[in-house]
Length: 513
Image 1: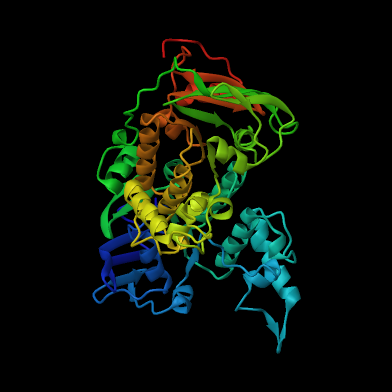
Image 2 (image 1 turned 120 degrees about the vertical axis):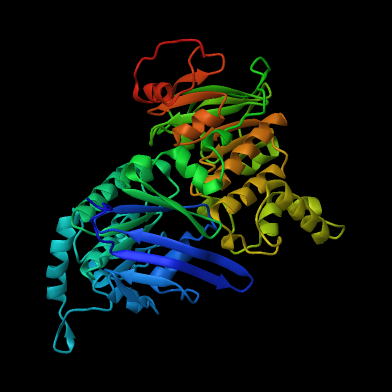
């Protein structure tokens, strides 16, 4: 069995440190990987995971004193070509494929089959067919990569690693852009590779994935090695304690006290778009965190976009503070006091090439106009500095490009922009997607603080522990309709079981909440 006392490691990294100008990114880190195991590497953003993997891939050279052995033999990885020759492959979150080439051309890139001086395309197609067949791929070797889905492109990356006879495969957040069905297919491929003896280093912030796949988990914190858990020791509480130095129970600490008897701030009745959303109704009160849950495809995001004016509705009503409203555009919703934090912050929320300060000020830039139309940049900068401090955004200053920040800090910048408009209702769609556990904890505290201040907060989340932890009530959608709610005032406690029962159409017994 992988990792057993009589098994021999395929990879050992000892005393690995890395110093950048003014920053000690890694301090004496160690990592041991066995053949045929999935070994998860966890830690907050900035913990050193990427730096360690870049040393393994040859992108970085470690400080003097580091020792890396493969099959018990000391190696010096002085570049990516050396790493590949040693059987090391890395699939990054941003896939490194050539979209204008075929699947076969990508798999053979740099190692093309030749017949004399000419490229032997027939041999390349034949060589790919077996690999793709073993992976269960449904596309052909001659398919243009740019025509494939993200999940299929990821499979091309895996096929390329197999073709290169890789023995150690690093997968960095591989499910971030995948649906649940695509994720299950990827897991099946991972299990197949593991059974064939491949060693897989799996990097993810998603606890359920780590628990499902891993034989062992190693944790880094602040550039140092904290420890490794064996399969029988892996549980969320232990991992969180190692990652952030505190218990999981402190994550969902609620200090706000929702007043359920108050007049609703937002009322949605029978809302429909004639397509995905068929009949959605709920109320949201001041000082309340309302969860919106449901299976993938239930219509949660589509409902949020109808309320916010991002999509046209064909029926139903929306009332704000007792008055009917019909926002025709997101700008009208913002002017009315309703803001929406998108689930896709990079594509739809942030301007990654702009600075942190410009992103924060974007929604209120008109407030800073001086006579003659000139912007009051000093006032905008002060607003940015105040937001950075209030949100604990880890950035040297507002002049830094927002694209250079971690996922959690990007999310806090986007949330800062929304809060500058002084909203009455905040709709937060997957607010902690793609952020590390420490940043999640901070975002939960921000949500709690907003509810304390009297804001009405609607949180859409696919993570049931998150919904259970932060929500006062939870409305559950199924097949485009709101099918019920649990929590305060409903007679049904908020648990993962009661939420899933409503999401799947199972009748639940009412009891004291």
